[in-house]
Image (tube, rainbow, N blue to C red; front, side, top):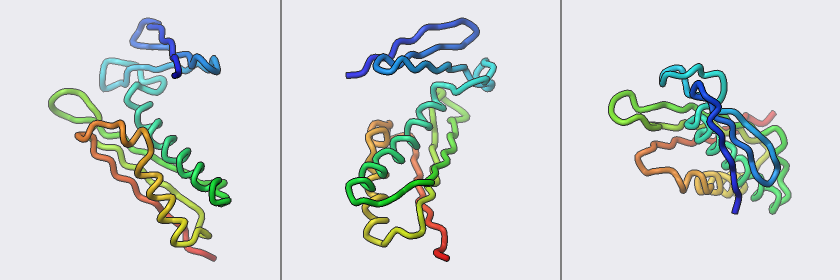
Length: 138
């Protein structure tokens, strides 16, 4: 169990403190929802959490199989519903992995990425598109 404590700071800004580490982060309402957009919004953190979760679980699998994923990157684009109740409509992720991975390792890592806990926790109405990319070998 992990406890995260939050405080509303005013001006649509919230500060969250991660109990185990004491690390703090600030969230702002986005510009398109009455905020200043000076930091991550709560829905930005959902998108960030998904990308971070994917990188973490493929990192765990890579460690188990003694694969070096140093330099692997991910990019996530969050799109909100434009009409109706405000919510995340779509998360599109691009994960860039080393070209040196064999076909079996690629399948194993991609499966892990698609089954990360954050992905499994998202509502089915949130469309998630994940693409894994491998640069051509030189």
